[in-house]
Amino acid sequence: MTDLRFTHDPQLRSFASDNCAGAHPEVLAAVVAANEGHLPSYGHDGYTAAFEDLVRDLFGPAATAYPVFTGTGANVVALAMMTDRWDAVICTETAHVNVDECGAPEKLAGVKLLAVPTDDGKLTPSLVESKEWLLGFEHHAQPRVVTLTQATELGTVYSVDELAALCDAAHRIGLSVHLDGARLANAAAGLGVSLGELTTAVGVDVVSLGGTKNGLLGAEAVVVLNPEAVRAPRYIRKLTTQLPSKTRFISAQLLALYGTDLWLRSAAHANAMATRLAAAVGEIPGVQVTRPVQANAVFAILDPAAAEQVRRSYPFYTWDEARGEVRWMCSFDTREQDVDAFVACVAEAANTALPLTTDGPAH
Image 1: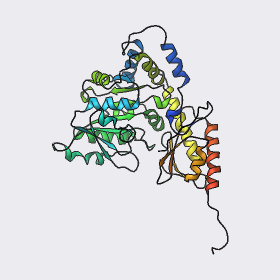
Image 2: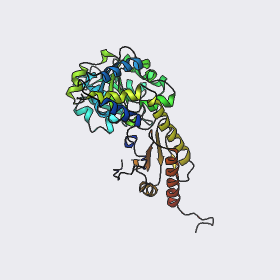
Image 3: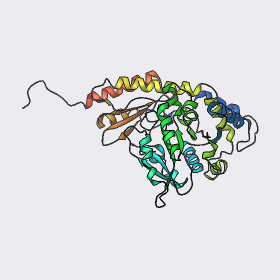
Image 4: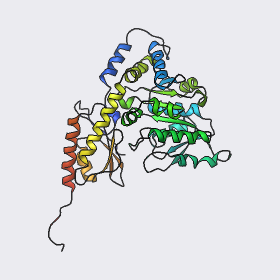
């Protein structure tokens, strides 16, 4: 992926990542409100207690919440509390835990990742079952957890039925299921279902509940849905340096997002902007949308010279150098005029990159 460095422009809407967006004003207001006075530290505060109540409302009475700082931290904490030192985690080759976390799950959680190739970024029951033969074989790390990314790194979304089938397959062979929900809100908004329908109802055991990509200021949570799938969650969170001392500020943000419809409004808007973007660039000669747009990501083939021309005005990543595939992400604050201006820039660059043709015979 291309290394991006750009100066701060308050009017700029980057299409590189939903991490590039700022914090939502409603979230900032919640942080300011939580800043009044002194409160107990390390989660023994009213904001965190309220978030724990909210998690039970959203995910069921057995759910427990552990606020953390980062998405990678949430995944490391979750996988560490679900595994032993000899265990392995089944994931896709494109999963965030495998590609974008600098080996943290393996080095800090101490698990081996069993990455399997997929065309669409999604696991299937048969892919999970293909690792069953390793169980009981002492020369191999033991599969213990299946981790699913929702929405996936390729912008695809697991349906409710797909998730239920995966959880059933994993549980049948004695594996637990972790869901990396950095963009869970986008998936739920795209499918028109609740957060619980994508997690508790289908049999997921532990969720990394995302927030930063949907307008929070560095706030995520590990949500344990099945207490029998984990061990020592409080100690593992502390051991892996993810226990915030001033937890109230993390919990206040999570409350502002998930305690209202803000998570849905923000995610649905980002998804709608991605749909608008894909429809418009799909009409540009020389641009090919390569993957279904099911959340807030658009993947396309764009001539490298055209991509560089566009990148002078708008930051974004090249996803696959060999194919010339780029990724454009939309955020809660992406505006229609941002999309339209970006599309115009892409159209101009693509037109410049098109080879000249002639109506006459070849010589």
